[in-house]
Image 1 (cartoon, rainbow, N blue to C red):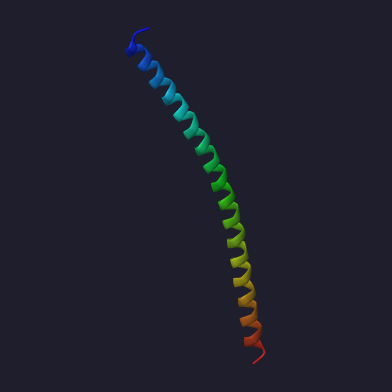
Image 2: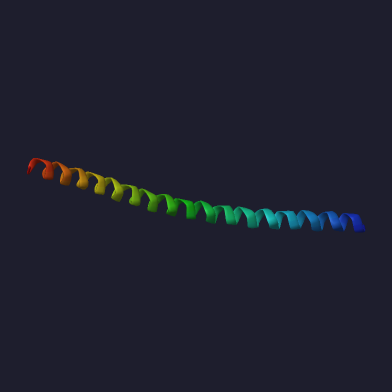
Length: 65
C-alpha cells in the first residue's frame, strides 16, 4: 500500500467517524427539541387557561356592578 492509498483510507475512515458523530449529535438534538416543544405546549396551555380565567373574572366583576 502506497503512502497515498494509506492517507486516502485514513481520511475516509476519519470522515465516516465524523459523520457518525454528527449523526449521533443530530439525533440528540432532535430529542431535545421534542422535549422543548412539549414544554412549550404546556406553557401555552397554561397561558390560555390564565387568559380564560381572567376573562371570567372581568366578566363577573362587570356583572357585579
